[in-house]
Length: 248
Image (tube, rainbow, N blue to C red; front, side, top):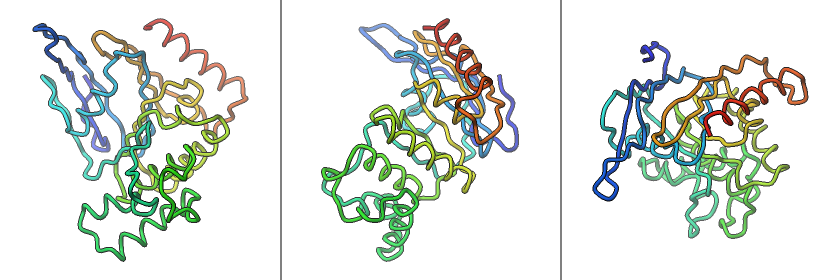
C-alpha cells in the first residue's frame, strides 16, 4: 500500500470496484494501489479487461469504488480522449473555450485563452474550422488545447495516439513533451504503445485483467530528452514487452 507523499497529486490505496453481471458480482478492479507524484508522467498499460477505463472514471470521481481510498490532491483535472470527443457543431476555438465557458469565464477572456492554446499546439490558423474539416491529428490537438485551456493540475489521456498515423503521432508527442516541461503538469496516460510508454514516462504501471489489478510497476530512469535509438532505450522496451507478455 503506498503512503501519501506530500507532493503526490493522486494516491490510491487498495481500491476495488465491481459490477453486477447476470446476478453475479464481478470485480472490475481489485486492490489497486499506486501514487502519482506532482509533475510526473505516468503511463498505464495492460490488456483489454484490465479495468483501465473504470480506473480513470474512479480517479475523476465519475464512478464510486467499493473499497479502498482515493486521495485527490488536484483541483482542475482535464482529459484528452482517444476519439477526440469534440462537439461537431462548434468551431475549433469554441471547442477549446467550452470548459472555460462552463466555468463562467467571460467571452473575451475565454476566446483569448482558447486562441493562445490553439497557437501552442500549432492550430491558430484553423480556429474557425469545424471538426469535420480537420484531420485526425488536428482534432486531437484541439482536444489537447481544450484540456490545457483550463490550466489543469492533472491531465488524463486515454490512448491519445492510437488513432493517428506515425508521423502525426510523433509530432504530437513532441508537442506534448514540450508542454509538459513548460508547465510541469502531472500526466496520467493510458497507453498500449510500448515504445511510447518508455519514451514519455517516468513510470509505467502494468495491469492484468479479470479482475483488473496491478502486476508490475516499471521505473523508467533514462535521461531526457530520450534517445529512442539507443541501446538503453531498446533494453527498456524489451523489458516492458516481456512484462506485458507475462500478464496477457
